[in-house]
Amino acid sequence: MTKKSILLILLTILIVSSGFAQKSVFTRQDTLRGSITPEREWWDLSYYHLSVKVNPSDSSFHGTNLVQYKVLKAQQLMQIDLQPPMEITKITQNGKELRYERDGNAFFISLDESQEIGSTNSILIEYHGKPHISKRPPWEGGVTWKKDKNGFDFISTANQGDGGSLWWPSKDHPYDEPDSMLISINIPNPLMNVSNGRLRKHEVHEDGTNTSHWFVSNPINNYGVNINIGKYAHFSDVYKGEKGDLDCDYWVLEYNEEIAKEHFKQAHLMLEAFEHWFGPYPFYEDGFKLVEVTYPGMEHQSSVTYGNGYKNGFRGRDVSRSGYGDLFDFIIIHESGHEWFANSITNWDEADMWIHESFIAYSENLYVDYFWGKEASAAYCRGTRMNIRNDRPIIGIYNVRYEGSGDMYSKGANMLHTLRQMIDDDEKWRQILRGLNKEFYHQTVKTEQIEGFISKETGFDLQTFFDQYLRDTRIPTFEYSLVDGVLFYRWTNCVKGFKMKTKVYINNEMHWLDPSQRWQRIKAEEAIKKVEVDKDFYVASFELTEIVK
Image 1 (cartoon, rainbow, N blue to C red):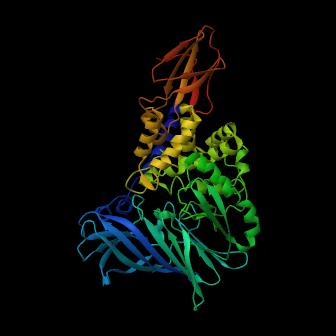
Image 2 (cartoon, rainbow, N blue to C red):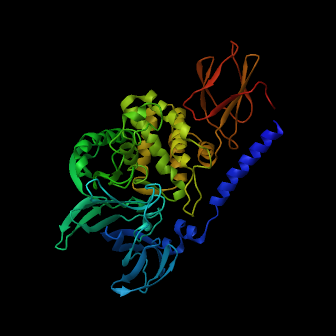
Image 3 (cartoon, helix red, strand yellow):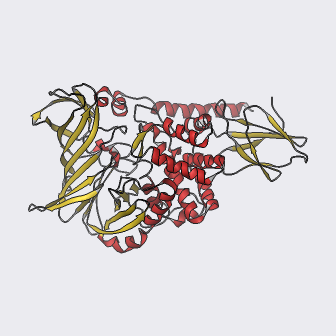
């Protein structure tokens, strides 16, 4: 290796590590938002009633949130989160006004009444302000205020990474979810608001406004709560699913109703494929909705948002370049798939966001598999490898609300695709995916729980496998050398102790090998001249001209 090469490598390492270090300097606010603080851990959410008046004329929100909770430990100080420029104006318990102090995004509320363990209590929070306007939804959280082509207001919220506390006061940490929620939104006529769950009541008032009341009867994650306002047309149908009749509702801008009726037939195809792979749709009680919005789309629970222009692919582009991504609408399939992984199975900490995104990036190829076959799905998954950067680990940093690399999408999908190859039993793999959705139904989970479940069900020791793909940036390399017709092979560029049985073609004949980081050898009756690792394993392969010991 030349001095110039060494210098280039060192410079690259310095740049990458420097960029990572800059992102890894965390503040008190990061800790308050990302950790289970003493002011959070003593109480368990049971119910929200969020009521908001939305004023398009000045882009403001005025509202209340009733927070009901169960006392787990004796404590008198409660943390509620609301991000600037939103302001809390008053907090009461049983009609008595409470004292509170603000520390950035966190409000610390002094409770006067004794909080008895096991009791169920509530506080009422009044708030207002002009919430952050998202300039690049959904990648930047906030509210978008637009007009449709007929001049009607077209308003949406989206806040996955930034949290629901961008626009409403809540316990903004993924580990705790309310058991149910009522969302009441007041807006000017003739607009309609669509939120999560089922429409319980719609009131038209004499002051020229209307209020929609949406009830969610299942646990819901904070960022999944949404407001969607527009001059909507509504149509519906019923999907005959594994748990019976599933009500499917579609809310689209009036002038898109006819094209939507045809294009949204893909929703039933999605449900058919994903109920096959993952088990029953997780929210039959709340129904399924697709709602047209101002941005590409997001996985809001039972209120999946859609803005992909009624085209297949992602904005008309096949993200895999395999050709199969042109056969379905990426947003309908990907964002709806999150009903299983993200909304039913939710990460405990944002560092484990891969639980949402890896499984659902992988679900795209399962959808292809269901309708076009296994080889097509493999081609789709391999095609997404061009999106992998291997810049930093897929798992982020815990307790500071810092998610991992964007590789949680394509690299995570290819990790799961590789795991499927190792299992080499498609029905067993399907039952593992369905088992995850049964074992962790409507739960917040940690990476260790997912890893443990899969390891148990496969019978494999997968610790180093997950360490390699989730906690390291290197692609494991199958290194080999052919010496006088004998194959020498091992793993390199990997975590210590890495092991993964791998399908390898030797002289075009398939073999299962179990490499280690020590040289192993195979001597065949016929001289070995050709070695090729199965292309569906996400690994690198490198032939040495001589063995370096």
